[in-house]
Length: 608
View 1 (spheres, rainbow, N blue to C red):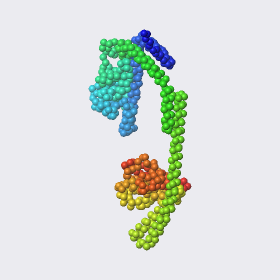
View 2 (cartoon, rainbow, N blue to C red):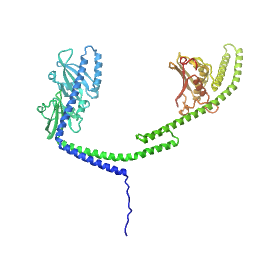
View 3 (tube, rainbow, N blue to C red):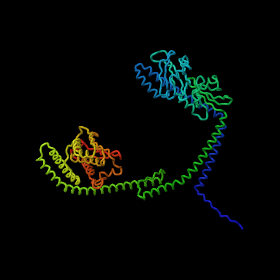
View 4 (tube, one colour):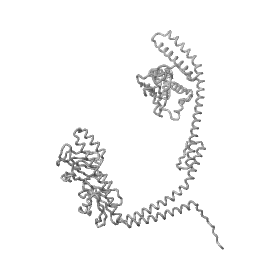
């Protein structure tokens, strides 16, 4: 029996064949380039290391010279400020403080004249942060006296004077001829070593450092050696280094039994030397490191190319799928969606067109909603007008009877008697009710009432006088905080009084029988606007119903306790007065109705 196995056919898309061929070519090229460069580097390692150490040493010396010269110039600025004869001590102190802020590397400046200190100034903030005190600096200087004679001859002195690892320091001293005295003095500065430490710690392959004229480490990547003022052993002696000049030299030497290649360059000032050294064996190590690094880069590039090709091939379909999902969302009526694509091709143009379509659909939906709201509002206002007309017709006649009876009774009442006072109140309030009914009818029919100059503080006083009794019965305390001398507004006093009475009564009803406080506040907002606020410490208004409060017939009160017309009427009145109403409320803390009205001189032609 002959066994037969099914033949399996593998398909390899053309794009993968091209990808594999490209990656193979890239791999071969990178391998050849890497091998050639490593061989050349290995062949020229000795000359390369010598030249490189020399160049690094020269560059360090050049940058070190720049830093030292910059410090000298800044030190001279400090000295000029201290020598200024016309500046007061306070002015000098302020200038010195500003200089310490600008030249943040300086922590102490002093001047020595004839072996005695002329003055000393400190940056106490930097010293405190570094855990160093003035006494520490003074003790270090006593233990390490400056060579004043050589400095006065014109030599720049620089030494490592680090006391704390938190604040590496160096001392720089230069001779100077002051304005007030022909005798030369010595300027001394204690400066942060941070710039030189950064300079010495740049190289990851070479050991780079700076030594002072005494052979002590001034700057090194190992901060512990700087703090310990370590003195490197095994370096070439001063005779070998004396000829370096500004050009520098590169020499081979033995350090602790290890063959070294070193570059040495003398700085222009301070007797400093920049040193760059590396073991000779490190040249081969560097070549191997270079080879490994380049192989790593080659493999990384190879992997990245493969992954990029795979993802790029799928990019087109992902964008189309994203647009398809967005179209489904729009199909469900959700137009607030945008598709962000930065492909810089036709797909991006398609996404932009899709975004414009959804934006236009969203605007059209908003316009339809606004039109619907306006239509509903118009229908409510029409119904409100019919109800207002009916109320006015039914209530005006009974009010006229009450007014007539009150006026007849007043003729028989004794002067200044309690009965006369009560009848006068009834007459006044009946007239006000009659006026409110007439204004309600005018408002429902969108008619205008007579406007004149109105004192808002008087309006508030009248409103308080009317509702104060009702408030007291319901344990509500009325507080008045008005600004005297408010400019008058152009409006109708009865209508404005009605608005603030509505607000106060609403606040009282919101307390639901609990004690509380209602406060009326009037104040100027600016030269053209006044603001009146009615605030309470009631339960507050939830956010979801706040936007419906001024709609006609909307009320949160139980059936029979409110018609939902008070705030809508108030809104219409304030709108007719060219004002505005806003609500500030926090649930559980209280509510404030804020009314803003334009003052008289802000009107044009005296017409609202």
